[in-house]
Length: 160
Image (cartoon, rainbow, N blue to C red; front, side, top):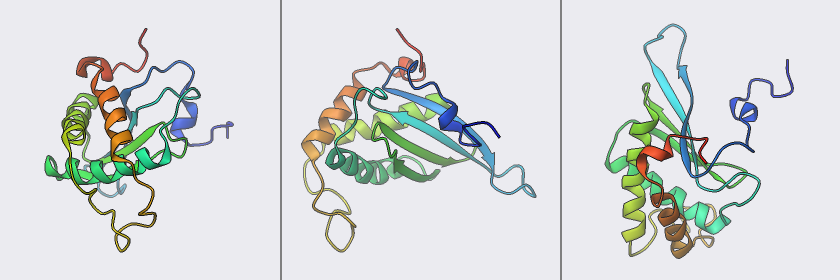
């Protein structure tokens, strides 16, 4: 076994990518008995690896807003999870999806984030394991930064 094992994201050269971007990380069969049942994992990067990172409260708020808004546009979302390095999110969808489809979906959700006013969905004490750590204003600034990159460029992870 090599030093990265079977962890796909460890094999990515984090010094060469240019954030923000949407990268198709892998497509997996859910069960070998049903090869037509696929899921797609995407790396949706907001901050440049090893240079910047999202503050916890902005990351947490974006997670809640993504979980809410993306589901308004597709039933294919299985999960959205923040990366431990705090530079972005992993999105998992049912089916074999394309990066351009995910980029359009993420942009649509982020447009809602920027315009959002009100209480953060699922952020009450009974609904959230860390309900005190949210920051809508910071989440909106990160959303606007992501939206500043043209959609066609978001799927090009090596730019510049």
